[in-house]
Length: 307
Image (cartoon, rainbow, N blue to C red; front, side, top):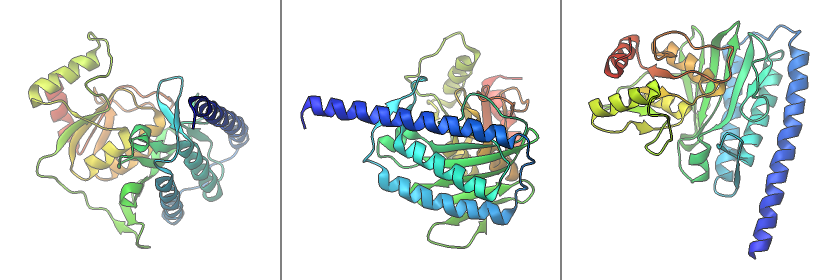
């Protein structure tokens, strides 16, 4: 293939992505207006498991796409691929069949405002950079927020062919793709858990920003730079005892809506650095931390010297 042909294909690919995204955004906006007048369907464990079953299938098809799709940069500098858009659309479609009446917030197609106190929040692919690099660990997720409080969440990690879901008050359940059985998830502890963040050594930042001061304090006391991870894989790492905590500056609503319920059902916390609740009427989340317990969150704050 010549350079000119390659450039032409790249332009065509970008146009397809843009046209697809604009069409989905227009459809999602119309759907949200229609649903705003309806009472959202109640969430049941049985239907949540059906959604998890379907998301395992979606994750498997995404894994087959890995390595064969290109990406483009969005306005915020983050990448998007055809897999992001495909997964997001298929999750929305299944969720609307099972749970009609829930407006949609999603990373690629309905990402400008919160439609009301009750909505579903979808990330079709968290860890797009990992996905495009051929790495494992990326996830897909959906969370349900009712009256300003997350009440249910489903997360699939295709590299393990595993789904985790939680309904408020019913604990966390998991299913591996090779099985049809859902089992209660039991939180594990690692011998040497790490601390994580969504920033890496090369991330640009204002040196006077209090968040960066906290990162520097943390590095000095840990003697190492925190492990860099996207939000949803990080939440699974906290659940499984691989991380004792994780801190974010860059997360959006869809990055944490599903994780919040799973972490809380296991006795953990997801809260702002000062301990106040997250604002579920906002797309952009303030800096926050995930910890396996309230005591661990207090220890993290003491390391960061946050009161």
